[in-house]
Amino acid sequence: MPDFAALATIHAGSFTHPRPWSEAELRDLAAAPGAVLRALPGGFVLGRVTLDEAELLTIAVDPAARRQGLGRRLMAAFYRGCTDLGAVTAYLEVAADNPAARALYEAEGWQTAGRRKGYYRSPEGVPVDAVVMTRPLS
Image 1 (cartoon, one colour):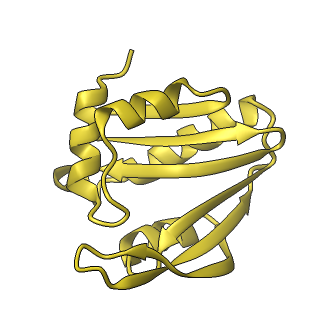
Image 2: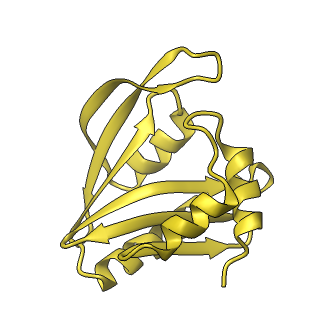
């Protein structure tokens, strides 16, 4: 059983917008049908599969564990978990002002599919676009 309190701490250290998720929210998402949760020391990825589509809900890496390949290892584990459940395509949304996450996704072969204007709010209340990205899993 994952340590959801530890995952929530990692998430809180990784996000200001969208807001970090609580221990209870992470536990509920991980318990949902089709959930894919993969955790490694210092980070985790959480998504879900519906029919043949996967949605990456969040990936979080402790700031002290960044720039060591953990994000890529988590993404690989996520892809395997999703394909094991029958997914062939994955989607995600990322804040337009999150260059580190966008660089990871682009390096992983994700392509921009669209943009949701003002989807997020910064802690100061400023609208931030969401970039919608997709990637084949085969």
